Length: 375
Image (cartoon, rainbow, N blue to C red; front, side):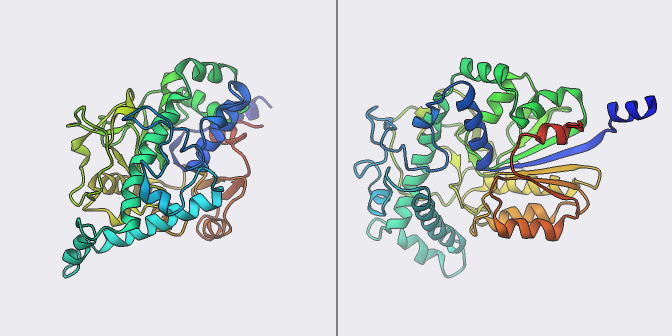
């Protein structure tokens, strides 16, 4: 009996933990935060319906509410972006815009096509969907920067001290126990709540491509960008929407991490939802590099390691990117998928690839699964 006790108490070291986070992680965090600290946070933050609160967000150049309006975002407005849209209507419009942009960027550097594609965005040949794409990037960056201010550092500390049922928080608090000698988080979220939580818990981490690698620290890779990615050469100037699409995009070396005063930047590095970073090697080289790094680490995962996938939508336009990570993982890993309503096609894919696949309808037990606890 004593021998069995020690077997349970001293769980063998697992070499790596590989975590892939989508929007579901942020939704999960906000739901728990609302139950503990601020029940009305949903009146100020909505990461499901990205247009619902657009009229309440102030524009940075005049501090008046109404960022999502014909005045500020005429192309988005003409295509039907409204605060009254349902989640499905908002997602469908975003998908239309990004599908058009993906196709545009896919061909812009093709021989014999580049000149024609450039004509599409010349002064006399504006295209509504491409103008909407330019507006969407600025809108989303400012939207999530405003969202970030809705949760103060003090309230975040209160949440961490009082929350006892969120499985992810349980896991984050246990990182110092050194069960894993390497934890990598691939997150497609623009927000910085994950980083802020780790900071509040004093868990060391580094942002791949921006910070120097740190032994024993959590590695965070953000292939779709972040509100914290800003240009190094940014200067205080008139905030505006630039309709000239960037065909020579920024490299990681041209960007820096910034966690304060994020609303003042009109430029940054994000790929909108459903954006396919695999098509953006020329126009978003920073993203291409981070995506490549994520794939390289996925290839290093072996059967002794743990993999967690949380809150991924698996839209058809970003499916290729998610699939690239999945097919490069070892088929014998312990694979956990967290989603209250898993997409049927993604569930089928995971069943087909991973023999040790487990689905969890909520994150409440993820801390126990990754910490090796018996619950």
